Amino acid sequence: MDQAIERVIAAHASSERQRREAQSINRDAPSQPALSIALGRQAGTQGTLVAHEIGARLNWPVYDRELLELIAGKAGLRTSLLESVDERRKSWLLESAEAFSSSSGISELGYSRLLVETVLSLGALGHCVIVGRGAAQILLPQYTLRIYLVGSLSDRIQNFSKTRGVSLNEA
Image (cartoon, rainbow, N blue to C red; front, top):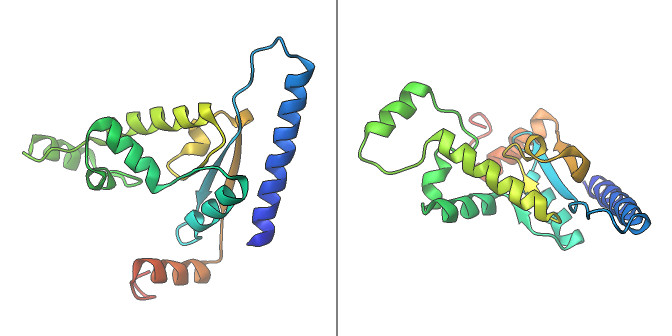
């Protein structure tokens, strides 16, 4: 894992060096957005752990669960309400039925809009690591280092079992 993280850091350093050189050559041109890292992952690959290690080495903030907290603050909702729609699919029928219930919440469409706005805002600021939630597809590719973590099924099952506190069979 350390080698993979070192490659990410080296790729970032190279991209950042190229961006600075391009800006110094053409000082009259508008400045380009800073780079960001979008980290996607298979379940059980410890993406959050890798993201936090990269963030620590670059001294950048990491947005995983923190992204939910930002969106909850924007929407004036509790983070727990967003967890019901975060990275999960609901059927149209279930979402429609919930809309008629007395519970206050957020629709998948409303959450998606807030998610895209928040990820785009973070990407415009740059110098951050965003875990999952489609960030690699939302952010402009020329300003985003896209990483996708994969792992063997047996390792992912073991990691998932440990982090979720479930049996290996359930994982």
